[in-house]
Length: 519
Ligand code: SIN
Image 1 (cartoon, rainbow, N blue to C red):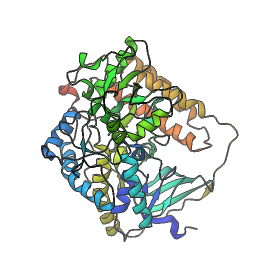
Image 2 (tube, rainbow, N blue to C red):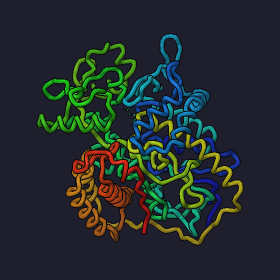
Image 3 (cartoon, helix red, strand yellow):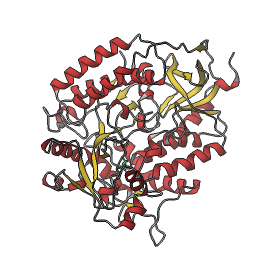
Image 4 (cartoon, rainbow, N blue to C red):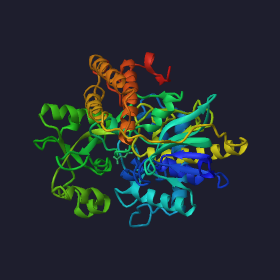
């Protein structure tokens, strides 16, 4: 029953930067398959505006990049992982250039280095201004197609196939054929990205539902640092516009935050002003919105030249103009939105999880690089650096492990049910998470949230799923619970986790990681 196209050496789940770069670096001798539940172009990486941090400026060094990352991580980074990241960054940039990525350069031809929050040096590389993610992903997709790595899109992972703590493949749902069937492999790499859709207002695309984390957890893998969700301070807030990220580089280039009365407010609360760490700026904005009884503040770059704005932020200019906002003349209405999951599937420095043959890479992985708060533009870099390391590990693992184990799992046709029962749970969960487990948290709210989430989870547990969204909703209910439990457990404030009832960092009790494992 199982043709060769269902048996692989390596299956990579996810088609963002981590998945594609891993695939490009796996040995060509390995039979590798990429699966993705949407289109190959739907990922956080594609939307990334901020660029790639690399210490290549004359006044910079990997050591300074290391110190900045550790400081941003607020005492919880894994220094070994950070070292690998920052020391590999310059050579990874070289590799991308060789692959065909054209980074922006200044008038002398040198790489143009931008500044973002928490970076003490200019070190952020962009390509096509604020379309860096798209520019890099287009090159990677082209290389994947040239190398003829097969990609199965519209295919969602429902479960990992794990026997005796060895990962032997994945059970997938193929939207086109409406079949549920197993794919067997010697190794599986999860590169499924973030969890932004757990919240109602997010920079993440609709596919970012944490599916990889949920299937890994259900199979016995460990999740760590789930309480650390980063909220980006500036997301476009306009009644008819999608929640578009307004890159931090705008503040890096002198953008000013103003309240609805046009008054600058951040420097009153923090000496670094608009470039204070993201969690701090997000909280200051939230308080200012409450104080002024508004659901947005403004970001103002009208003092920059039109030429500079058009060359550095062409995409934001075009997108805002669609909604009548000319960013060269008008203030941009913005509010904080969910952006990045610092935690994830716990891995060692080689991307290995506690399940043999199962690896995790990129945003879905918990390597400890980001600690309690990720520094801007370290995440595309993480996907590339660890994608390459994991590809080498996986290639060795595959080479040293005999045949693929083909288990007796039948192919089923997906039943479609009349009622769409799960739909209503998603928005309820999102609103509860925003209210009780968002930028500010406290014990009483987290307890209310957990009760609600547990009740909803019980209700949906046996509900039939009709489409990918239903599976996502079940996954997100599980992950919301794990985030809320971790947030309740951590009785301190650190990085992106802010507890109103425990507003200070507590290194005596809490300089440690919270790990979640089923059972
Ligand atoms: C941004 O451009 O502000 C986002 C960059 C990032 O989160 O790394």
